[in-house]
Image (cartoon, rainbow, N blue to C red; front, side):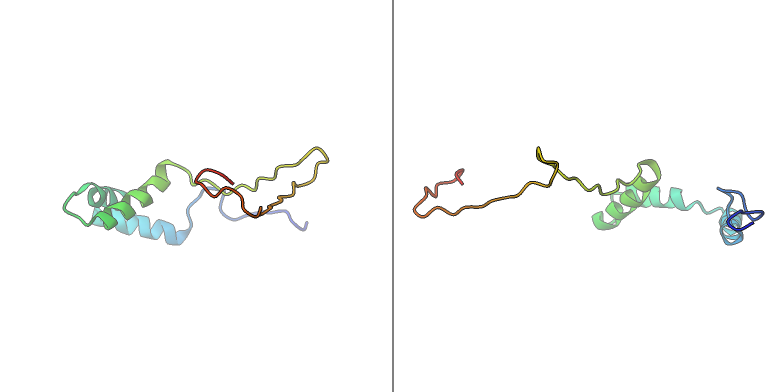
Length: 97
């Protein structure tokens, strides 16, 4: 039957390459997350490097926000039109349009 999956890995199951890397890191006693945290928290490290480590680690605790399209509709349910008028001799002091 077309479109019907009958085998393969279950959702959430790591593939062979991922398992191999995890096993090698475990054999070496290497925890990349701990390593990034240690780099991020060490004040002797360059602030740019520390910032990159904190940003990378943040992805594990806070999801990235997706961009959202936002459209304002007027009474006719159509996008509004922006009209800009330039007035000759208008007051040019700050805070006025």
